[in-house]
Amino acid sequence: GENVEQHPSTLSVQEGDSAVIKCTYSDSASNYFPWYKQELGKRPQLIIDIRSNVGEKKDQRIAVTLNKTAKHFSLHITETQPEDSAVYFCAARTSGTYKYIFGTGTRLKVLA
Amino acid sequence: GAGVSQSPSNKVTEKGKDVELRCDPISGHTALYWYRQSLGQGLEFLIYFQGNSAPDKSGLPSDRFSAERTGGSVSTLTIQRTQQEDSAVYLCASSLVSDQPQHFGDGTRLSIL
Image (cartoon, rainbow over all chains, first blue to last red):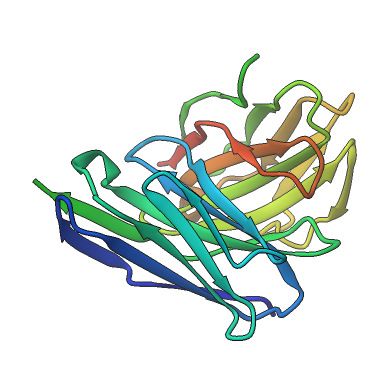
């Protein structure tokens, strides 16, 4: 069945450094890839998303890149700040379906 | 309301009891999703509604789980004869239509004693 693998499971970076989280999906028909940030005890919040007709999307310090051939997409956070500390989830959805397959999450710690 | 609302926020109950969890989606959103998130884990898809219909119920863990949606708005997730392994956070999300971004509620933290 469909699967989304997410790496790493934990990531610690120094404040100001960059962080990269990578997800690999199995269904080549997947065409929508959102990223969510979940702070402890809070709801997942959509931070950025990308559709399959685009290779890269950027929003201030956050960017997402998509490689359809390799079936992977990555979240890039630059100039990290302590408030970026959270669990980040990737997801993939296949065209014509409603079902989102989520990665297992990455716990990001930004050290001050 | 402005966002997806879930109630109760916390529920503690004894093993064997039935529980009902409620989700109020964003007004006008036709698509509604239920997920389960166990401690430190990712999101497990349970069920999806388009309007009042649930095209796929295969994500429900067992026949003790059921869900309905009425009037294309509020949805309830019912768990009968609860077991300790049902303990988790149950998250609801809605989107304008199924191919638009999902917006999540704060979840219901369910604890089975």
